[in-house]
Image 1 (cartoon, rainbow, N blue to C red):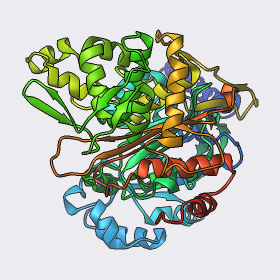
Image 2 (cartoon, rainbow, N blue to C red):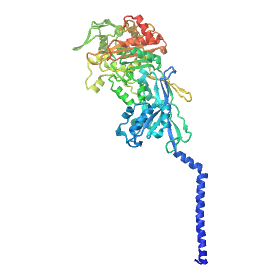
Image 3 (spheres, helix red, strand yellow):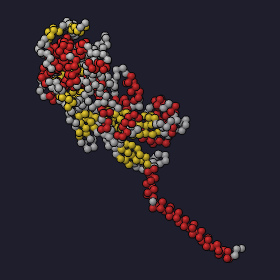
Image 4 (cartoon, rainbow, N blue to C red):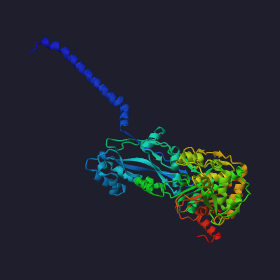
Amino acid sequence: MESQAAVGSKKPRILAVGAVIGALVLLYLTQIFALQVVEKAQYQSKATLFSQRALPIPAPRGEIFDRNEDVPLASSHPAYNVRLVPGEVPEGQVPGLLAKVALMLHVTPESLDKRLPPVMYSQFTPVTLSSGVDYATLEKLAERSSEFPGVHWDEVSVRDYRDVSSLASVMGYVGDITQEELQVLYNSGYDAKSVVGKTGLEKQYDLLLRGKDGTRYQTIDALGRQQAASREDSPVPGKSLVLTIDRTYQTLAEKALGERIGSVVILKPSTGEILAMVSYPTYDPNAFLSPDASQTYSTLLADPRFPFLNRAIQSVYPPGSIFKIIMTAAALGDEVIDPHRKIFSGPEYTLGDRSFKEHDPHGLGWVDLKRAVELSSDVYFYTLGVEYLGIDRISRYARDFGLDKPTGIDLPGEVSGQIPDAAWKQSHLHAPWVGGDTVNASIGQGYILVTPLQMADAVANVVNEGKVYRPHLLKKVIDPVTGATDEPVPDLLFQSTVPAKAYKPLQDAMRGVIVNGTAAAVVTSTAVQIAGKTGTAEDGEKGSANHSWFVAYAPFDDPDPDHKIVVVVQVERTNKWEWWAPKAANLIFQGIFAHQTYEQALKAIRTVTPWWG
């Protein structure tokens, strides 16, 4: 047994150890109390942050209206995209999972198998299984989320185009942003999940239409189940656009052109507003919102009729006889010939060892400038171009009418016309300009190319006697939150240097085309006085039909420029050649000024011309 002295000597050490242990226990208890009571709120907040899921709330894309501001041409509604990350699915379970998902989404398993072939089963790249899924369907899927590993969904704003038909190439369509687009747009607030305008007005005004996305914050457990009420930062909807397009005019022009490859432009020359723009063939922009969008795109891209092309601004054609408007302005403006002097328009015009035919094989006899315009005499204009004007003066006036550059319309992809001269031919073809080139240029053939919209501006130049306003489709921007509006003012594109004295005789000559010229038998509407110019143009393919043109404006007799409209119709040679351009314009003028539908206008016109089938 230890001695009493030994035990006494250990007592201080035991007490010291006990004190240390007691202090440590007290320290631990204090820390536990601090964690569970004093700092509970702080750590609970941090834990909540780690268990929160931030989900984007896409901003509703701005609506697009025609000038009547009643029914939107394009609107948006919320929906969901369902995606699968195949690498998150246990091995061997992907086929069965797809079959169950197909049942939930009301699609065939085969359609999902096509989207996710076996070679992709191990990938972690999300694959879209279905787009535009409604909330009711998604709710059922979410209730059974534990049965669908790897299945995710995102809220999206789905575009809805209503009866846009021939406006498709003007409106454009939207789609998921590409990597190339993201590189350009990243600094403007776009991300990898952004939806962007691909073509048309959707692309032109994407920054206005897209709005600002919101965020929904959800508290979830380890299985992804929501544990508390979510909170959100609301999205800011995109701005609404009001277009200059009049839906009534658009429908009228669309039906008047029919299923003929070509285009129609209706322009208000006093402001540059586009009242209608038709391009045929067209496509349905809603088709790009489906899961089969890529297949739709490929099919349309392979169509030899090029339905993606907005022929009013993206196709160039030889103008043919409508170019005689520019030739007449040059003759009158520079006074190179007495307009009353008559030139014999025989069956042909000879230059050196070549002869150039008149469109009437019998010739047109003696004609002065006005009559030459009315009858569209080729020989008169051959003579005028070669012997009085020359290619430098012809090209100068064509440029003065704006035919050598884009109009600057607020649409992407516009192309420019082509106005040649000696320098152009030497530069592009490495050949000298010859007399035959001038002969061809004098009647809008050869190397001259224009777009229908450029010709609408050329007619606006005649109507406004020198002023041309930039063609545009945006009439007003509306902020849906504040109601504030922004209405751009007409923009003067250019002031022509054509002498003022040239315009009145030119206008009279264009009126004569309708009254007792080439269009007299076709343009028969009595609803308004029309002035215009017919045109047919070869495109170099032997044995083919010709392009059909008609450019015009009305009312001819109304002094108020704000009442006038310009109509340009271009029908490609691939259609059966039947002078349809002036016939279509006749229906359009009748419908607009008699306030008639296409069907009513057609009936009224047939009453005047019963022979017309």
